[in-house]
Image (cartoon, rainbow over all chains, first blue to last red; front, side, top):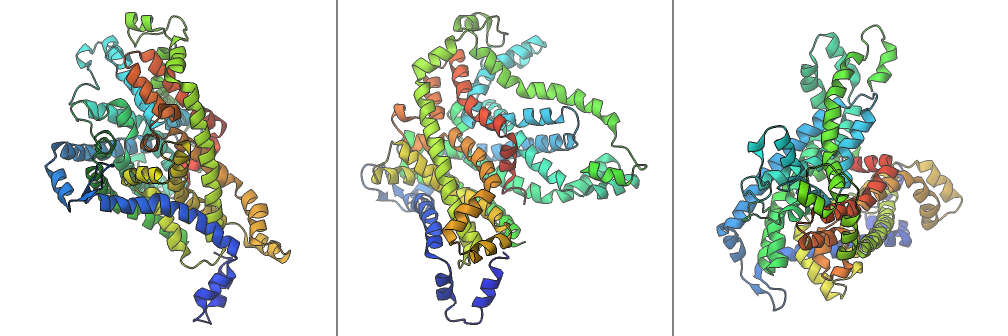
Length: 310
Length: 287
């Protein structure tokens, strides 16, 4: 900010030529520096995004010209049991994935906040899964969930034979089985975010409360948590946006099966688009995903914009 | 943080070393449990198929066999897939960071009208759910004649990533001391020279953090590869792996071996650049 402040002040008196003067003051090379990346993003992100909206109002197989059908795709979506299943699954996913990874990540961040022997090792182990791609995480857990796999073997070994299951083939369990795998990978990320948040908390407040006789539990909820509000907002927005994007891990583990019971909006959209070739219908699903995500995107952006101001 | 406060008031309370044994009692089993999927996948990968069939997937290995890795490499073309992934990742990371650095420099050090709006719009592009882009992007790559090429994958990765990298780099470059710029300007250095000689070298820490992060993102991508590529020979490792799984769905040692091969490059990045990786995770999230 400091660098531009005098420039802006100098531009203020001559109102009329403000834009022109700004244009002249910024060297042409710098305009180029900005224009190229901006053009790339406009062409590969904003232009396609705009196209999706118009495509969602058509029936299109990608070969013959698109036929405009108005809002018919959205009417059809409402009556499509797989779509409503995917929508419901996505809600379950957002709550389960968000809730479990925040609970786990926050608890671990609090436990591992203070440096000590082995603490660095624990932290590394917890966020190591982050580097494994979601697709590979899915394949790892396919091995774990295999009928004769480690999980069933472990349940057998500790005498819980009755809990053995065909985890990924059971329509009632498959979604939760995939969810556990996704949480395994996410907890480390949330922990890192909260660890950073805890670092910037004011320790003297907590000490003062401790002197006044507040228990650790009380101190955490009344003193530490309010200071983590900012991190929590970011975590919340990021988690919901991530939930709506989730694709790889489901695709790698179940492809939406058995009987579409693990279908999420993104997997169903992909299947409609690239397996079945219903590009217009798929675009309508994409628009629904966008509409669900936009509120959280704006929340996140507003926060970043405020951070920009200081 | 508490450490820094301690010397000031030593008599009040000690840092409670008494609590630590309980921490370890809880954390050691949890850590082992956390790592167990990775350990079991390694176990399965190094056991021969006959042994898996005879004793089940949950058993411990009694001998080491490379059968799974051999089949994965021969049957799945994993060498070629790894090569594709490395090419796309290297090109994608370098290009997107170069373009983002340029944009961030322009937006952070010059009085460009509406720069805050431009910046937030660019960031918003990166937050969009990719699903809203897939169908048109696949059609556009076809229209410009790069569908089913690695170029398409690189271009798409760059376009989608730029917004986020620009935002983060902007935050960093904005904080560079103004005096350095003044001094350079007095010496007669132009905008380009200042960027090359001063801004880029000073931005190295945030560029390193973003590079570590972008490497894992691009290398681990699946959905863009499945959207713009059709020919198996051009698949990056993630997509090739899912094909392998389709072909060897019951040969768990092959799948486990293939997954490990796909996980190793990003694990190397992680261990080599752990500090940059963690700070990369934090950028843009903890302001």
